[in-house]
Length: 240
Image (cartoon, rainbow, N blue to C red; front, side, top):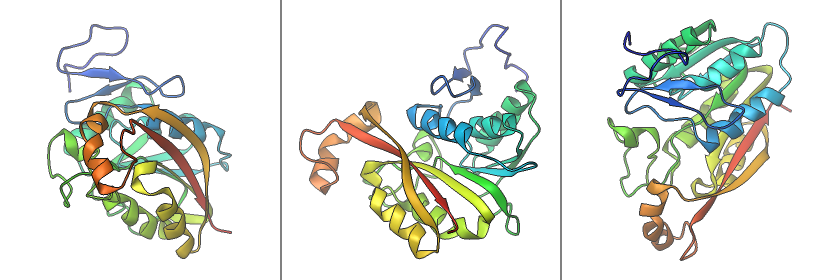
């Protein structure tokens, strides 16, 4: 980590300073860590609009670079960031230092490091890209986006755990692709007593990963033949 520089310095070849748009602070990304993209920007913009109580506690799951935790911390939240990847947690700690934000960074599987804690804001940008492999990758770059044949390996687990993570007035903000079943997420959250709705949408062209799987998506019935676009959505859920 000592080889990384701030924005004022020269960028080493082994790192990447990434941004997902104007709402996303510039951060450092190590190899294998998800780079902030359009989905990150949509979620960050929603976080910026969310009304937070004084002394709010925030939790960012699947934190990657930690950029969403930085956005929450800049809003005044007492931020916690969690990722299962050692490299991601190292990047998140470094980005917290660069942005002079006090962020508690923990390594673990989803909410395992915070089993008995409740938060006013929970943000999640999980892996959600459908893959031919039923199991999630255990290493490599695909670990950041592959999520089983329906894209829901992490989404279903997040929906199941969300109620126990939220305070009585807490809010969950989650971003996903239309290919991973938006209605399935809304219904799963509803079954667990949360009111959920889509608060942000954006259509974008397939990137390299999605383009390479376009034929498989169509064969699986996830898209119509010839489709080369997806819709990203941000879902907001809370206790009624």
